Image (tube, rainbow over all chains, first blue to last red; front, side, top):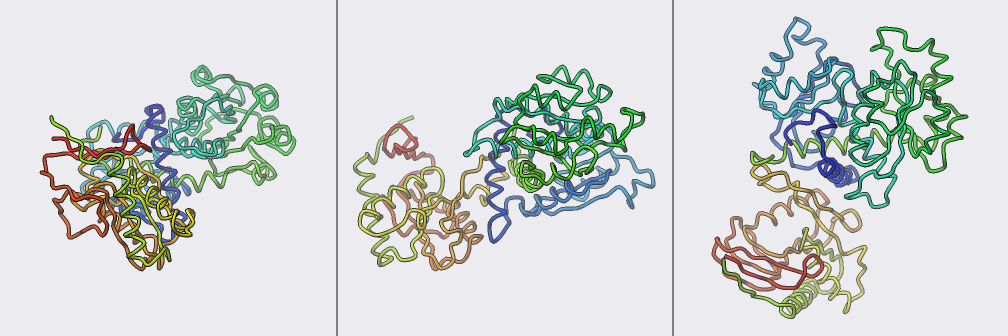
Length: 316
Length: 178
């Protein structure tokens, strides 16, 4: 593995290997000295063309825990605002010695272009490209679910786990990456959302779909519900009549929370629009794994950086 | 390729028993003792040494037996394909003021032991660190020596030593190949 562009590229054994390494990495967070010397002398660049809090900080913490040097690059206030291209920006960073580039970009395919056009030698990690993919988010969601599903998670997949991904599927890179990875790990995935936001190509990959969250809770016997953020900034047209109507039909509220089966979980990639796709009671309930997701994000990203950067040239 | 068996089941048992007693003797008992195995076979040997000690002394497994994965501390990570990571379990969570006995199967270049010393550093400041190995085959590349040795086995660099232990393999034996 040299790059991580898409969750669809991961085989089951590669995905489980990353999750297993993440389990050991999570132990580092409990130590007195929260640092490993593994990536000493390596430089990781966070190349962010889009706003982000948790992903950027999570990658930064992960790289620092492994003793890598971290450069944070935000497009705002850089030469990008003078019109510098992605290629030139990336080559500039590599000329300064970057070994890995973590890229978030509003255009789908930006990470793929960076990795495959021969612009740079550095490893490329996709931290979200447009409406395409966000593979480390899918890995941390899988890690969080696996951790709750098995008492001893090492080597395990997510076989037979029933997960619904709910909301704005069309604009969600989180949904796309999760659909691929959850399927790879053996879970049953159901897509739920307004008909205008359920692309048929993704529905064809899923194990079922529904236009109503109530019906989905009723029919699909769900172990986990993954609520997606309504991405108003990516919506160019009216995909649903109003926010109030969205919250009423597809939002997770106290009433629906009570109808989820005992021992089931709620995930949300954050940031949450409280009152829109999820209400405060659900977000703060015992079923909610939102904070565990954030904590696990660091371990999973440490594992990813280790996989991509620690090995030598004989690496596949 | 030729191979010959240099230690069998009873030889390994005798070596483990002797190492366990030497550890007790050097430490004047089990006070502050922590035995850490280095994955994979060091963990098996550490458990065997612990079991011998437990027959004679009052010692608790949860406080005195652990394992230390040193993958993240290796100096040759960049020269090899990515290694999978083993489990680390430090009894009590800290090594402050403990007498740590590191256990590994074969002592060769000394680089694994060096990495283990670095790893130990991140878990506190032990009173002392000792090294116990089943086989010392020579060819050190660093100024490191073992305190407790099962058997000194002069080898050439071209030869390979395989340690098989029933907990992780089909039989108990030490084989030289090459």
